[in-house]
Image (cartoon, rainbow, N blue to C red; front, side, top):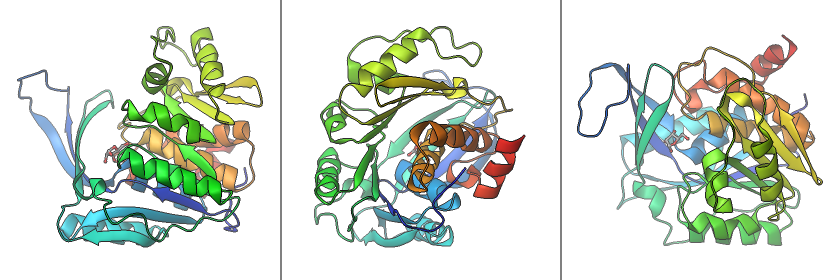
Length: 316
Ligand code: RIB
């Protein structure tokens, strides 16, 4: 598998930066219930920052455009991104807002719930600065920053000949209008149903095969405009729709301990591979392996693998 390493096609993330506060418990509490947890940890997070780190760890040249507050969480996140090799010249430190915080609960089956308080991620009144993509670059956005910022970034990116990558997470109705701006669309099953406006039947989730419903949904989403569509199916892998045909890339069975950020790891790894010259199906094989490795460790960005580890895993 090739990934960029040479930095020819730069990757830009315009997105969120959060401090994750994570608690681990046997099971998630029900409404109104208190449960005992086993441990609590602080991790770097935010869908934007996570995707930037996934790409940087896999050899891509990455710039992050985002917002943090002037507080300990913000300075910690900026240092973390810098240490990971992400260009943080486009990260602004705001005086009047706190760094975004995500409260994550992870249960014994590795699933999670997340509450995000956006803080500085919501403050873009002074516009996007430090954003200077060239033709052929990739520009990634998610939905943890205002939708009008995403629309502006995608328009500017396309105007400069860069490829736009949209991961509409967490989904809101505004995301539907942004799909038409995306050259690459990466969605999970829930987001796919929300975009298509209908219930999707992907079978019972057993095994690692994609159901006929998932293949059909990938085709329907692909026809909305993106040149490349990836429908992620968790442990069952992904369906890639490109050049008029759908390809299922199977999941890789692993012992999962924490699935937080697995989708971010997939998205970052997929684009890192494409920036290095891989086609969509080859990139999906690579990214499925990267995200499988990420769920075997705790945390979001902190759990993401480096290039040598993914290569070694792919050879097994
Ligand atoms: O996708 C996982 C991320 O969602 C977490 O890191 C958390 O910060 C939230 O943004």
